[in-house]
Length: 111
Length: 113
Image 1: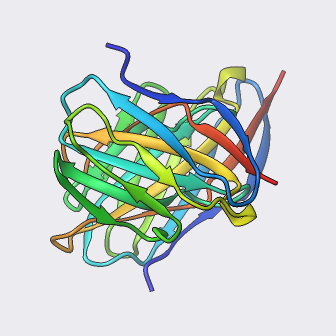
Image 2: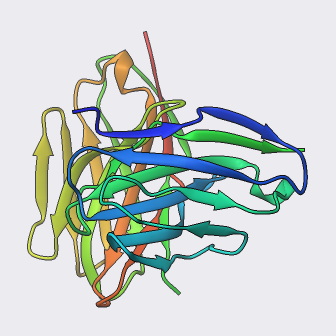
C-alpha cells in the first residue's frame, strides 16, 4: 500500500492564480481530510469528507473548494491564490474519526 | 472555546535520557485524544489513541497518560534516541455528532548525542 499520496510536493503560485492539490489513498478509507499547517501552529482543518459525494467545511474553508467523486481521491482547489494561503497542506484519511493517516504534505508559496 | 495547549514549546535532551511532554485541553464533550510524531518535512504519524476510559497506553518507548477529570495528558519517552527528534502533537476530538478535532501546536524535541 502506498498509503496517502499527495502531489505536488512543492509549488509557487502568483497571487490570483489557481491550482489543485491532489490527494489519493489506497486504504479504502471513507474519511478524508485536508489540513493546513502554518509555521509554529497546529494543523487546521479546511474540509473533510465522510464518503464519496459527501463533503463538509472544517475550521478554515474560505478560499478553498473540494470534491469527492471517488473513495480514493480528494482534490483541494484554490481558485484565487492569496499570500495568506502560503502554508503546508496535508491530506489525511481514516476509517472513522480515529488514527488518521497523513500524506507527506504539499508546501505552497503564494507570491 | 475548544483549545489544546502543549508544553514545553521545545525541549533539548541528551540521548538516553527520559522526557515528558504535556497536553492540556478544554475540548468538550471529549471523544478521544491522540499523540502524533511529526518528523521535519513529513506528515504526522499516530503514536497512541486514548478514549475517556483509558488512562495509559504504550507504544514501544512511548507511553501516553490521560486524566479526563483534569483534562490533561502526557507523553513520556523512555531512553531517548536521536531519531526521536521531531515535533509531538496532541490532538483531541470532540464527540459532537459532527466532526471536531483540535490540534495542539506541538512540542519540538531535540535529542543530542
